[in-house]
Structure formats: structure tokens, C-alpha cells
Amino acid sequence: MGTLYLVRHGQASFGAADYDNLSELGHRQSVRLGEYWRERGMAFDAVITGTLKRHRQTWEGIAKGLGLERDDVLPWPGLNEYDSEAVIATIHEGKLEKPDSPEMYRHHFRLLRQGLGAWMQGKTAPAGMPSYVDFLAGVTTALDHVRDRHHGAKVLVVSSGGPISTAVGHVLGTSAETTIELNLRIRNTSVTEFAFTPKRHMLVTYNTLPHLDGPAYEDWVTYS
Image 1: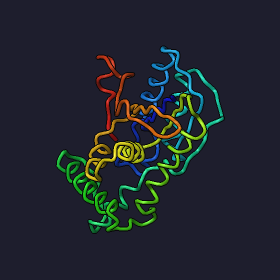
Image 2: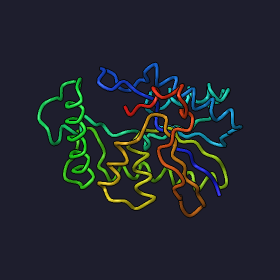
Image 3: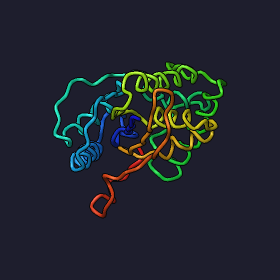
Image 4: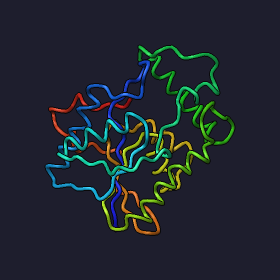
């Protein structure tokens, strides 16, 4: 039986002109995860990442913490995140202002919930995005690849909250609403673990932060 570790990227730049870039804290979170694994003798037989900048930066931080230099990383576009602005635009006219208060953040995520639900039900077609059926296929083909090519191995995937929650929802057979709630609660550099055989994946843990356990890291837990 193999083990698949799915890691959400470190804190990105929510509200900035370029979200797809780790913050200073995001870089530190990523390195810390690698250090935690190095302390425990962790080694991966294969590494797969989405193709977004924050995915690559997160993997580079993990590799630094592990003390590794490896270029044999498989880029997988199907592990890229959905476009939240495009999703929201299908149900809300006009660009949202940058959230700068608790109420504005709540408003943003209320709209995102509604927009994701409509997209997942096939009721909307966000500009520049695949259908949800195709988005799901991008995730499930990555899971299929891991089962087909890496039986008995330890595999690391670095991706985003949407693909990881979609993978969990697919494995557990959850409703769209539950998958959305999983998505909106996933934390930066959190680890989700699947056991897998050639036939299926099985959820072991979801959204854990073992590397940030302790008073020294209490301010390192983020969601964006």
C-alpha cells in the first residue's frame, strides 16, 4: 500500500495585484514543513505539483527544509486552482473591492460559496475556466496516475485548496456543499494523507498542521 501526501501551498498574496506569489510567511511555512519531515526521516519517491507559481515556490521551500535538490518534479496542470474572481463574477456584477474588514471577508466568501455551488452544478461557466466536470477530471487523472505508477511508494502532491478538497470529496463521495466547506477551511501548507492501492485511494487525515504544532508557530496558521 502506498501513501499520498497532498499539501496546500503556503500563504499567498490575497488581495494583492498578484495573488500567485507566496508571502514571506508562506515561504517560512513551506520550509518549516520540509524541516519537520527531515527531522522524521521522510523521503518521497515521487513529487507532483500544479503549475502555478505558488505551487513551485512551496515545493522549493519544502525541498530546502528537507535538504534536497531535485529536478524530477512532474508538473500537472490539472492540479491548478480555479479562478475565484471568475467564479464570483458569474453571480455578482462588478469587481469586488479588496476586503479590509471582517464583514467584507465574510461577504467575499459568501459569494464564493454561491458561485462554486453554481459552477459545480453546471449552472454557470466562469470565464477562462474549464467546466467543473473537466476540473474534476484534472484532479482524478492525477490520482489515477499515482495509483498506476507508484504502487507502494510515498508520493507528494503540492497543489491548492480547490483540487485537494475536490480529491477528498471524490474519494469520500461527498456532496458539492460538503466539498465547498472542505475547500474553505483548508489551511496553508496543511497536509492531507491518502493510503492507496492500485484500485483506490482511502482518506487517512485531512488538513493537518503537525509542523506548526507549538507556541512558536501559533501565528503561522493561515487560510489564504
